[in-house]
Image (cartoon, rainbow, N blue to C red; front, side, top):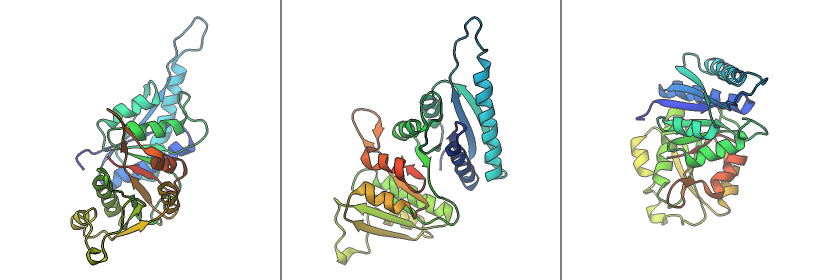
Length: 264
């Protein structure tokens, strides 16, 4: 990887703590620096009001607690932290511009006072320029393979590449799943796969399989996530600027049984 920084957004919630643990372990595995961020709203002072530094102190306590969580999850992790004034989404998106990976927690009720974390995770997954991981569900050494949702779109090579990279880092296999739309290759050429073969050559240690499944893509991938270590999907181009996940990625962010990586 060219960039060697992983950024994780925290808000003091259990979901944020899970994101910190996942990100810290990944940082050690990749030899990357971990940067922990939170955002807080700085209100203007008025006569007789409580000093504004209380919001800063609260945010500072959140990131310090997250640092302790990171070091407990991954002793030896190189970690820095910041509590920045502003809205959560712009703060995280700005940090993502110089990062290899942006990590946030999954859906829960409440969260940051400016924006519920469900909205934060969805927006950063949609808009970030780097790959994003939304930490949900089960994960860890005993978890299953990396599942890649592939279609015939332009992002499929990127999705496959990230899936193989993650599988190599975690010493597991890749299960590539294509749901509807694309047809399985001719049996006479079943040993050839234009989307997977270049990555099989680059990562010969990674076991990889390909499956073509009928059904609704979002339902199939959510079901597969329940036995996966990580789901890898791609963004969908929309309009002049920006990216959107579409219904498949959005449903995964809400219901996946494991962390979801939006590959860029």
